[in-house]
Structure formats: structure tokens, C-alpha cells
Length: 137
Figure: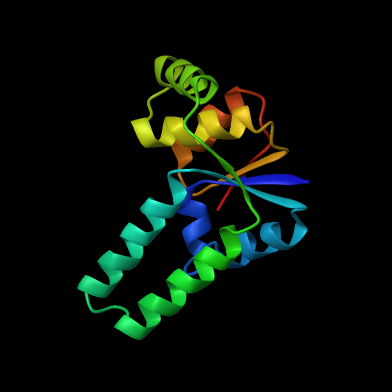
């Protein structure tokens, strides 16, 4: 089963918060993790913010980044292609979304995933309207 995680959901794999157990369960069920190319900079940005706010140490930052890089080494990562952009623009025209959220949705559609996992309610609504099976965490 191809499971797509947007950044808001996949970050829960590394930072324990509400929804972490559900994300880990879907990761375990997936035959292939699917991600947008923007997930890496978005999650590393979150790790950097946590470090700046002294919520994690430098050593914890390094460990989290190593785990993230290992996890994505065999994931299906969708580049920013004309197909992704087309899906993203359609999503923006039909929904109230931020640009990056539309790119996640466009990436999931381009990858033809089985499940779309996100913590963003508006993004989940938009994904459901495209016919994707949605899990909100």
C-alpha cells in the first residue's frame, strides 16, 4: 500500500505529539512511503526551530536528522513536475489552501497513492474531494 505523508504528518514520526502513534502505524502498514520533495526542507526547518527554541539539543537535532535521512532513503519522493504543478493549481482553485499544501496534494495525486495522511484539516478536505482515501492525524 502506497501511503503519502505530508510534512505535518511525517514530522510526527520524529517529534512525539498527538497523532504520532497513528503515523507510526501507517508507516508500518505502508509497502511504500510516499513524500513530496518539499518534505525534507520543511521537516528540517521544524527541527531547526525546535533547536533554536531550546526544545531539543544539538545532539538530538543530529539524531533526528539522521533518522529522517535514513527513512527517506528508500521512499518514493515526488519532484516538482508539470503534473504536480497542474494538480496543485487545480487544488488551489477549488479549495482554500496554502501553496505548499497544494504541492503536497499534487504530489500525492501524481504518485497515485492509496492513502493520504495529514494533520491539516483543510488539506484533508481537499484531498478527500479528489477521491483520495484520507487519514487526518
